[in-house]
Length: 156
Image (cartoon, rainbow, N blue to C red; front, side, top):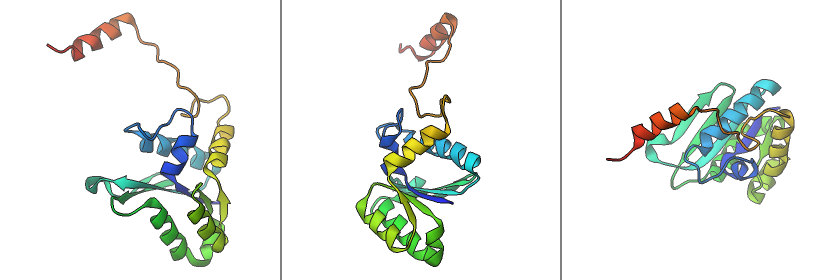
């Protein structure tokens, strides 16, 4: 069953991801790519507050990301997408913790899953793997590499 996901609603439920990170969206997309490949299903993920240069949609394999421009919201885009699906909406699972979206999704007979439940499902699909769902380990970097990079970034 394909998934329709409220991205910024899901990010805080995934350990190691934060809405304050500049690359939080791409990290979530990477996690969703792994999940989609393993499950063999499509995922649509919606992010709001996109800057003008970044709005629109992009495909990442089985994951299609929608970056909603400022002045609109991912919630509005998800609700509009459900309306456009018509009867096909019953074949999708909507992932969010937003009550308005959950009500709309149930109204068109979509399956629903709260963001925290889906985050637990993602973690269960990657036991023992570091898929961005657990604290990331520090990479092995030699003292020489550290000195090199410190020299590169040293302000003069």
